[in-house]
Image 1 (cartoon, one colour):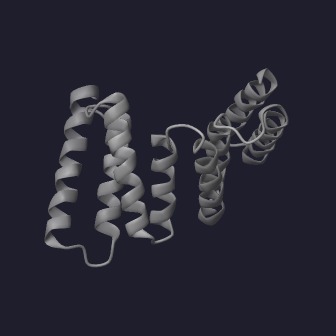
Image 2 (spheres, rainbow, N blue to C red):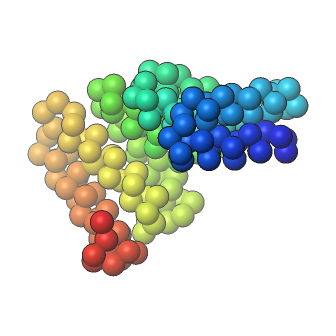
Length: 169
């Protein structure tokens, strides 16, 4: 597992530098190493999420969804999908114009983040913002949906101002 973690860290460094092909190679090698040791395991989830993030950066939404689905299957061996997985899946589905799927995934991400880090947290606010955007991007949102999306945007702004101050970017 140590080698897998080293490859993950190296992949994260490549990703941060914009070296997406190198990041992808490192992540795939990390998955291969971990699979040799543990087989299909919940420990694969963070590696697969990082692979999906590369595909998202490349705007390859279908491939990102496929990788996130695999990550969800790997996570199935424990309590359920992580908030990070649900958040990223929701973002991808929104880009693929699957607004109902995006909303369901993002609602689950918000619930999981509220449960794990609380309502007034930047990660929760990020999922709330994406949920509100998905609600508004759906064709012909109802007045009720529009009002709920506006309420979420206000809550996100209040959270950000509360945590970062009124001059945040």
